[in-house]
Image 1 (cartoon, chains in turn yellow, blue):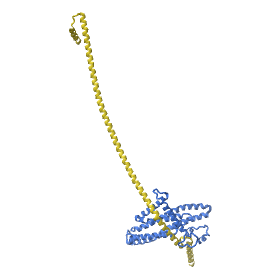
Image 2 (tube, chains in turn yellow, cyan; image 1 turned 90 degrees about the vertical axis):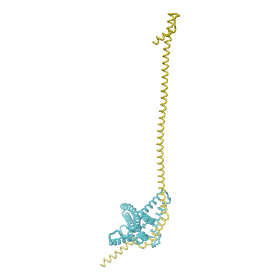
Image 3 (cartoon, chains in turn blue, orange; image 1 turned 180 degrees about the vertical axis):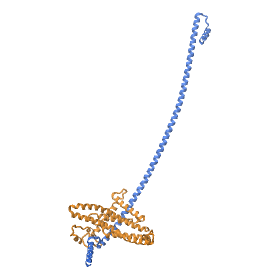
Image 4 (cartoon, chains in turn green, purple; image 1 turned 45 degrees about the vertical axis):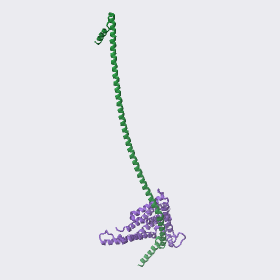
Length: 183
Length: 253
């Protein structure tokens, strides 16, 4: 019994001794020192952070998010402008195309009209010229027939004169020849 | 220290816990509360590193941030989002407080991974002060905001019977008071264990000669893990603070 107590005592002492020697963390003599300097460090760090670092970081981050949202707004604006410009361009393009088609149609109609007028004029001229030609052909035919008659009359008168000198009646010969030519 | 002599006779001359000793920076002797120690140095270096990151990194105030400013902004955004997601819009008021805690723990954890450094967050005294500060602050916020209504946090009104509610209230109450304990031991324990393991493997490497490649490879792997743990533990501490804050701001279940 005494032995066990002794052993336990010994063990207890050893544990205590081990704790002192082995684990500096459990030595109460250093606690005040650690606690004091810890409090100093923590207070110092807290002051540095709250007075300088955190407000600065806060403002930098706020500025950045402002700048980013500004830029996004700006970009939205520019995008809208670009879309408007594109719409205007498309509208003016469509308008120009329409105008061009209108002009082309107008020009075509104009040309057709002028062409019609010219054709009509040309037709009229052609008709006039052919009428003139026909008239002249008729004239020539008539004059040719007249010349034949004249020659026949003269020839007949000569023949009559040579057969019956002095007794030729010009008028009678003419009428007879005319009668024969017609017949 | 006596520890060195005690372990001197063992085969491997490993003192994995020596790295956690608090010693005066100048000279030697008693560690008084005001003595400038290695703990002081590394806590101040933590504050300096964070200042470098958060203040000098962002001094350009550029619209298009530099690398340093980007990191500072991402850290800011990360903690801010965490606070607002977990504790709601009302919690944003306490954001600087949580930011300070998170950055201090993160900075201390990461700096502690430098060889020869001192891990302030591996000391239960340090993490206990941080956790108790959170506990007291959060409890005070709860009572200031809601008065006695804050006690609704412990009264589970959705439980079917009054007897059950009483049992649950006792459990809730106990779990509430255990919070600072788990909050602080989780951080200190993780840091201490990781650093002790690194030191143990370093001791093996020193004792094994050519075979040291194996423990050195293990150190490289554990170092990566410890880097992860450094971030995760800072994150866990901060997010639990947010959760406790949320309980204080919205105590009804």
